[in-house]
Amino acid sequence: MPQVEIATVPYTVSADYLATVGADFDSEAVDDAVLAELNKLVPLGVVVHRNGKAYADEDVVEIARRIDWSALLTRIDIDQILAEHGR
Image (cartoon, rainbow, N blue to C red; front, side, top):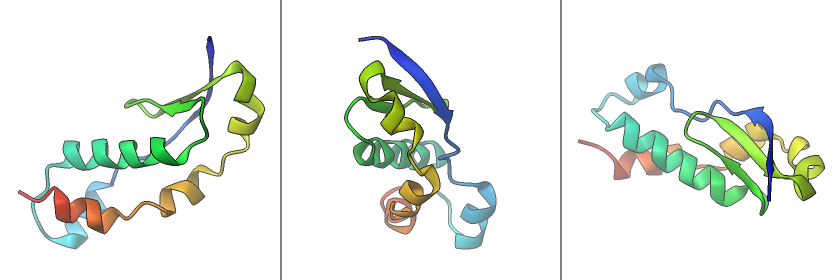
């Protein structure tokens, strides 16, 4: 099924946040884990790619356009992901 671009989602963990935690992390693995968690939270037919672009199947475009990305991102336990990806 064709997909429609619906948004650009700034899902990556900022360097400033990583600096406040004060440890060494595999930032690419952290971002990949955040992306995986985010994709678990979105409705079926919606996907966020590594470049941050979100796409939706044509039959869920209207639902996808109403997604509150900030709210979804706050549901992800960044500290737990960091704990799993320290160097």
